[in-house]
Length: 472
Ligand SMILES: [Zn+2]
Image (tube, rainbow, N blue to C red; front, side, top):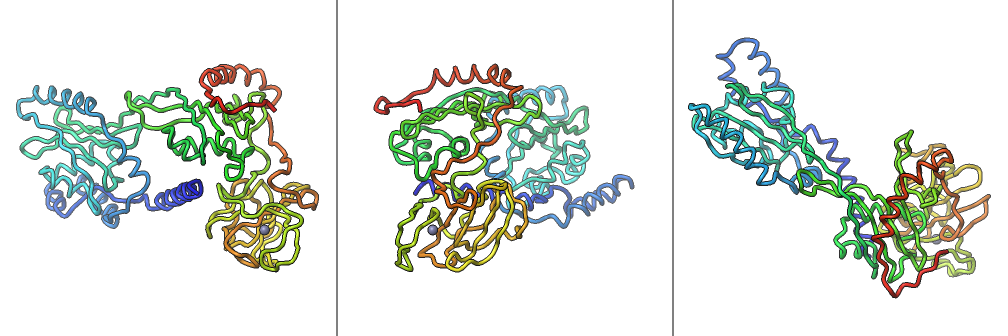
C-alpha cells in the first residue's frame, strides 16, 4: 500500500512543479511609491531608467504561492562558518573606511506579497538605496524573482546606507552585492560542487520504499532504482520478503556540506533469489547515459512491464476465469491493475494510437500499435490524454489515459492486454523485446569504464545469509 501512496505523491509533486514553472513570473523586487519622489530630483537619464523599471514591475506585485523549488531552497542555507568568513572580509573593508561603522549582517525573510522596497523599509535602509542597488550590475536582476521564504541578508550602516547584500540564487550559486569605493557592485559567485561516491544496502521486508526509508536512502534514489530495474522486476507483484539490494551512487557536496544525491553508478538487486545488475555508462559520442547489464545489454526493454506504477494486480491473465459481473465463464485475456481513479497510465512502448473510443464492456479504450508485431490495449479508462487522437505518435512512458471504471467494471482499474501478431499474451510473462545494447564499437570503452565501478560494487554488496542465490 505504501508503494502506491508514495508514488501518487511523487506524481503529484511533478505536476505541481510544472504548474509553478508557469507562475515563475513571480514577485518583482523593485520600485515603490517612495522612489518616485527621489527620482524626480535626479538626472533625466536615471529618471527614465527607473521609470521603465518601475513600469515593468508594477503589475507583478502579487504574492505567489510556495513551489517545490522554494521548499528545496528553504532546506538549505549558508553555513555559519561561511557567513562569518564573509562578515570578516566586509568588516575589515569597513574598518578601513572611517565613515562606516561596522555592523552585523542581518537576515530578512521574504513574506507573501512582499517586495524589496518593503524589505528595505523593515531593514531601515533608505529607499533611494534600492535604486542604487538595481543599478549595481546585471547580476542583480536575480532579485526580480524572489519568493516568499527566500532569505536576503543585508549589511547597512547607521545612516541606512546599504553596504552589502547577499542572496542565495540556488544550491550552486549566490548573488553578492558589495560597496566598493563607494559604489555598489553586484556579482554572482558559484559554490564549489564536489561529487563523492557512497553506497547503501537494504533488505526488503514488505516494500522497496519502506526498506529504502529504513536504510536512510532518499526517495529519489529509490525511484531511480525502481526505474532502472522496473523493466525486469514488477515492484507490485514480484517483490519477495528477503529481496535485497546494494546501490552505489554519487552525492553532491557544496563547500563540504551535502546538498543532494547524484546519479546511481551501479546497483545490484536480488529478487526472488535472482541477481540483477546494472551499471551506468555514458556513450562517448552522444554523451547519453544509460543503464546496462555488466555485459552491455540495455536494462531498458522495448516495453514497460506494467503501464501503471506500483499498483496492485487484482486479476491476472486467466483463460478460464468467471466474469465478476456477467458471472459466466469468460477468459480473462489481460491483467487488471487496481489503482485509484485518475492514476496516469503510460504507453508501454513507443508506438501509434490506432483506436480511441468506446468498446462495449471495455468502456473507454485506447489501443496502441508498436511496430508491426505488437499491440497494447488499455480499457475502463476514466479519460484520455486530450492531446492524443487516432494516428498520434506516443513515446514509451508517456501518459496516454487515466484509470477509471467505464464499461463493465466493479471498481476503478486498468484492464491491460498485450498482443503479439494479434494473439493475446500474458503481459506479466511475455518475453519482451530488448532495446539496443552498447554498440560493438564501444564495447572496449564500455569494459574499460565500467570494470572499476563493478569491482567497487562487488566490494560493497551485502547479502543476507538466509537468501540462497542462483546465478540464472
Ligand atoms: Zn480485466
